Image (cartoon, rainbow, N blue to C red):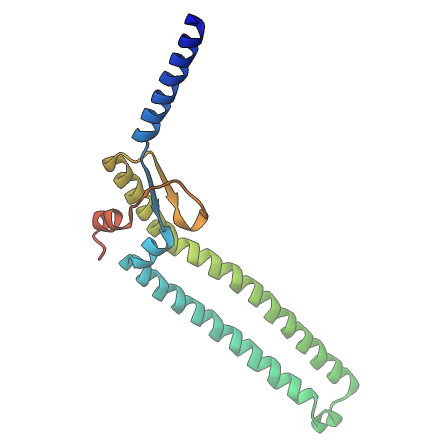
Length: 169
């Protein structure tokens, strides 16, 4: 009988300790995308990125216009006045220009990704530092991304606290 009472007592104490530990755990949530989008630095980065993208698109448009001009020249009746070797050179130049356009397009995509990362990295770091500071100041054990969870334990939305920390309205 003593053995049964002691097993029940140990189980009861274990449940109390588990409930107490769980009660002390604070969980918070935040949408980093929303936070970063609301920061003034993000708007400046978007403007800089769009300017960069537009300049690359203009260069691509120039290459494409040159390609279309040369292509249309080869599709007209004026090609009859060219010799066979001249036509071959023009066709080869057109093919080279097409390859140049494709290469430029690939490089432009990589350059835009790199530029976007370069512009966003300091903003993301600032946002994450603020989230960590707010979590530490307010005793949160875990802060999770809202976007990554479908089901989660009860927690607090830290957006207002982090925005206040960053001075964002």
